[in-house]
Length: 86
Image (tube, rainbow, N blue to C red; front, side, top):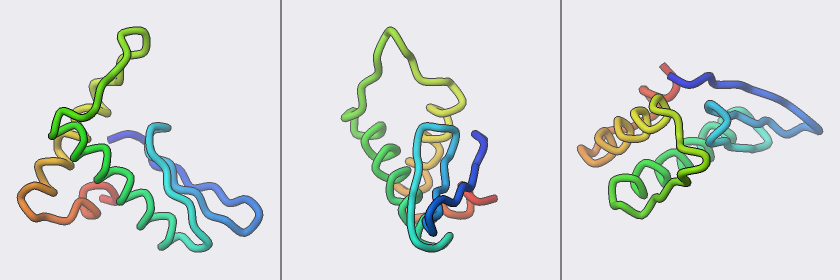
């Protein structure tokens, strides 16, 4: 699992997952909600084939595996939060 980091600046909270997805909000809950939305967008784009990568900077295998797993969970009607915040 990529590292989950929390930073706060100017009263805003930012959750970042492995440097490839983040969410911001005025509270930790808002930041978490935004992060989950972004991860779902990425995972579903990967599943639909709407996500391309660069040969110059290929994504890490760990990241791709996580996004694939999150896409599988979402496609089965599950909630990815338990996987992201485990």
